[in-house]
Picture 1: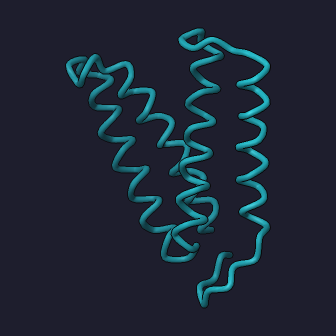
Picture 2 (picture 1 turned 30 degrees about the vertical axis):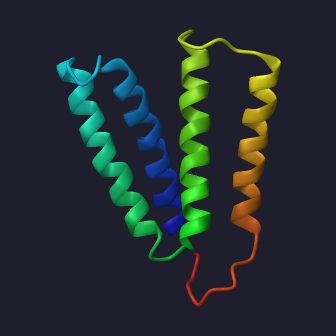
Length: 112
């Protein structure tokens, strides 16, 4: 369950980052509300997940998934250019996140 919460909070990270970009400096009302709601969900999920997953791993996964989704969304909707290099590095981020999930942790915490 902690991993599911962590991944969900990473999706909310991509939502708040995209909404922040669309908010025109927090002056566009709908995007500003979406930003603050998604920010709260994202941070709350991360805070809960780090009770069960080591902070370094959780934060790296949260940032990696959120950044990958944010860039992917921007490339799909033409607000950012796509290139072979960007796609290769996004695949690298995904591979690193998957690797962190399957790397054993030496703390007393459970990561189930």
